[in-house]
Image 1: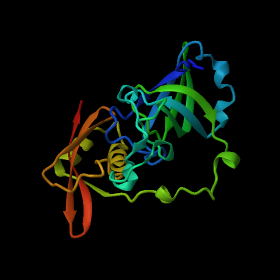
Image 2 (image 1 turned 60 degrees about the horizontal axis):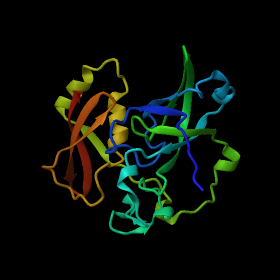
Image 3 (image 1 turned 45 degrees about the vertical axis):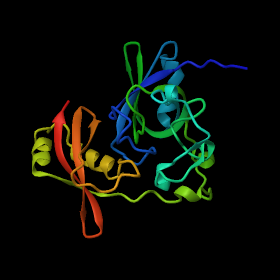
Image 4 (image 1 turned 60 degrees about the vertical axis):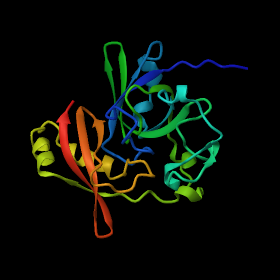
Amino acid sequence: MKFEITPIGYVTSCFKEKFATPRQPGLVSLATGQIKLQAPFNHPDTVDGLIDCSHLWLQFIFHQCREQGWKNKVRPPRLGGNKKMGVFATRATHRPNALGLSVVKLDNITFEKSDVILHVSGLDLIDGTPIMDIKPYIPYSDSLPDAQYPFAQLAPNTLNVQFSHDAKLSIATQSHKPHLQQFIQQVLSQDPRPAFHEVDENRVYGAKLEEYDVSWVYKKSLDEVYIEVMAIKLL
């Protein structure tokens, strides 16, 4: 039996590519985006009462992974990228039906002509992600404090993020983005590099965040690995 599903909307996200996008929702509170509903789902009646919900479940498609297919076993980043686990025991992006599930904070709902737009934060989705369904997050049933998953019992350790002189100068010119430095700090502190990459101070990493091209390096001081943002340029 086959089923056909249609996107109800698409995401406009501060993350323009997979690299540096948080691996889980809620880790970057300043990661914002919008969900623009598509016809015939863009009727105000479809979101009547939704504004009273603080958080939402989003069901979406890993649209950039579909053509790459899937495998029975994958290498989760939390296990260092070296150990394999069954795909259904992970949140890997390469899945049989490329379906994903994410919880986000609902900040506002706006209506512009025929558009219904949901403004969300704590996002872990890239720009253009198709949304298949939206449901309220219900605390008493969706939050299970006794639930166990031994491979990710605690949030991952975060790295210290520093900014070079040039990077600070660039931030200073973006007065219309008062939280830009904190946003970049939140994103990079999650350590977006591949798990198998060792610290190489000559390797420059880069990612497109909002309308900026951000580049950084990893450095090591004593036993601490930290990030230094080298440049922030407008795309």
